[in-house]
Image (cartoon, rainbow, N blue to C red; front, side):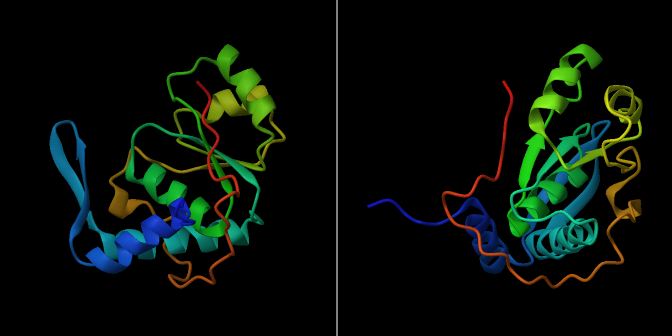
Amino acid sequence: MMNEETVRDCFLNAFSTRGDKKAISFFRNGVVETEITYLELDRDSNRMANTLIDLNVNKGDRVILFFQKSLIFVVAHLALQKIGAVAVPLNPGFKKSEMEYLVCDAKAKLVLTGSDKEAIINEIDPRLATIVIHTDKPYQHVDFFRSASDSIAREKVDPEDPGLIIYT
């Protein structure tokens, strides 16, 4: 019999059982820039989820993640899973010509991107809701979502609900 647990449930279980243990060490230029525990990751992804809810992102909505490697990417992905939205990570190495198809096909409600990729999204579809998050700054200095509540009402997410679209 197959386990009926969702990816979100797996993350929530890890958060609750690992608490103060280190979840991620983020390196930039070969040096540890930020370390974050499971508890901090849970709280920050709740804050990001509440920020996205305030931006009218709902269960089933698609959100493009167009970032360089960063902790923000991880937190945003977890937040989307928590609210039942669909993460659409796109390779930051994609050129504009590749992105045109993907942005159109994804039918995203929102794009979260770094400042280095904003121009590409605006050239493709200037009407597409886009939030720029400065991932070039250390994670602890990114304040986009920090003022939101760290508690969240859990959206019912079923194992058959989509949570991720990956283009290959």
